[in-house]
Length: 292
Ligand SMILES: [Zn+2]
Image (tube, rainbow, N blue to C red):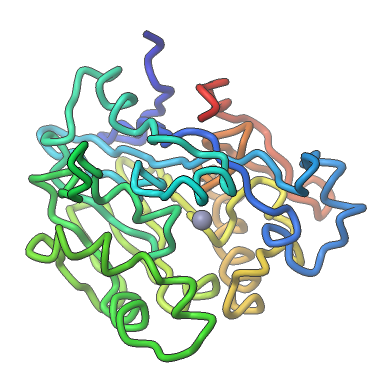
């Protein structure tokens, strides 16, 4: 089996795992951008869906194995599997390709609680029961994200988080709610960006002068590096724009590696500013991978 792609960031190794390919409505993915523009880069199918990835960086150092987000997993009902064109998920298979298993994950950092990021926290057993997918992991989540996901009475938010109780109940004892930027381990920090959700967070690795940042859903594909290209899901797109401009700017000057939650072609990239336009200079191409 092919080994998952990896980069070295100082003393850390970052391996790019994927929970497989899924499809989602292109209009939802690009918000106010007309289809005429986004379809040049993301050809929609006959249901207006575009092909997307579920990228989950696995950050390794000594005996620590920190997974960022968990993809969709295998919990979707048949009707949702059809809508999103996703099967049982591929994350555990990716781990096995590395010679690892779910019990080897020591830390999990969740960018936010949408189903395509936290669905893989649990595995549905043949009996139908949901159990923790990563039984030994400490799970780091922003307290504000947890509270909004559990308690909001707003109709739109309730729909966006309707899966949350199912995903969190089996892992309740493993949750560590954090409030603001937190160094999870020396050199690995969770940073609140907001924008996509009020307490959306990203993960930064700093080691020996090198930097990597998983931008999760503030830059879900390389196409979203453009200021106005933001998801319709963003609760505060202006904040998304500010935050991505800040971190993409630093990524250019600091020659950081950045990675995207959903890019179908590249797990990660180094970028340059080409006359005011951010472009990919070097990338870690996504494996063709099994469509599920
Ligand atoms: Zn997402």
